[in-house]
Amino acid sequence: MKDFRKYYNIPATPEEVFMALTNPVTIQLWTGENAEMSTEMGSEFSLWDGSISGRNIEFEAGKKIVQEWYFGDQPEESIVTILLHSKGSGTSVELIHTNIPDEDYQDIVEGWNMSYFGALREFYTE
Image 1: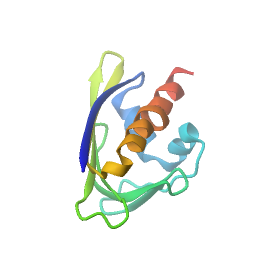
Image 2: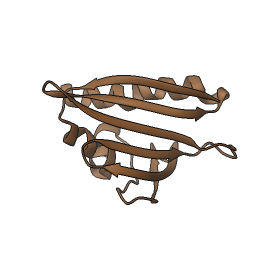
Image 3: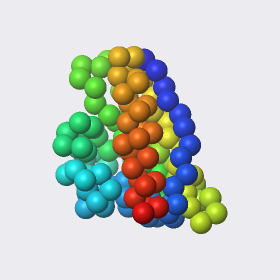
Image 4: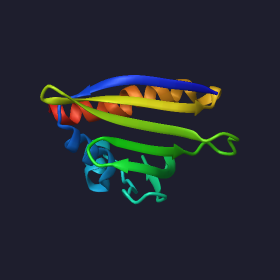
């Protein structure tokens, strides 16, 4: 199991970034894929047509998202914590993803960098 931590700069307010990560309609706009998402704690979510799925643990509007991501029969929970920090006219996103299975690590890191926060940054710079 490995952990991944990184900061991303997004040219949007923390409130806009929070909505882009939690509103299924907005998620579909920047991913181009259907999304199932709710800000109800304990609710299940599915992104990129089921490529990513899990359970929502905690939300603090405009500031924090905590989720459990599912990786098959993994014994330890893989927890994603996203913290949103105001930075100038944009947002510094602090990502902490724990207990990533070794065999999935490279794909997950690439996904965070390109498909997830890379795509979100492009969405706000277009």
